[in-house]
Image (cartoon, rainbow, N blue to C red; front, side):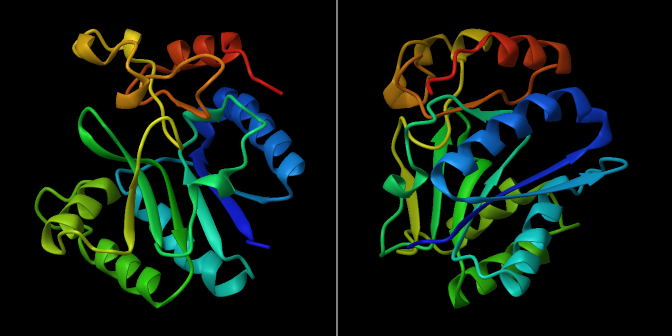
Length: 212
């Protein structure tokens, strides 16, 4: 049986969203016998993405978990029936999706092992370097440096990261295209509300139907 931990980091400024999202994730891990680990910070700095990688390394060191699913707090599970295991396999160590801007690190899964150790160390080594503003930048750099790394799986859509493109008018060609990551009610597993204001996120989360 694969052991999976969902990891979520957030700051106290996100308290209202945390009440919705963490309840959602708690229901999910109870249903599928996973583990949920959360870290609340007093303040949020520009190093948020790198903190995720640091916590992944720490969890792998102290917990008997095989996989960590890192989720940003602006993502919820909208289909409780789906088991995240269906997106994993025995041949890769890192799973992530692409959106209109390339890979999106708001939701990714990593397997414990020597590859993960090297990968996380590479990402953390980019902190503070030019244009390496977050872990997503560092992951892109890794994928550019080591092209077609066989340990990395780019998941197709719909899978572990979907976006409501109707709220991003700059990308009209993606609206209605679940194959490009547009969230579809009744079909999509995860809804990720990236780059939105807090009130808009709250409103959407409160009114998004969840399939039980």
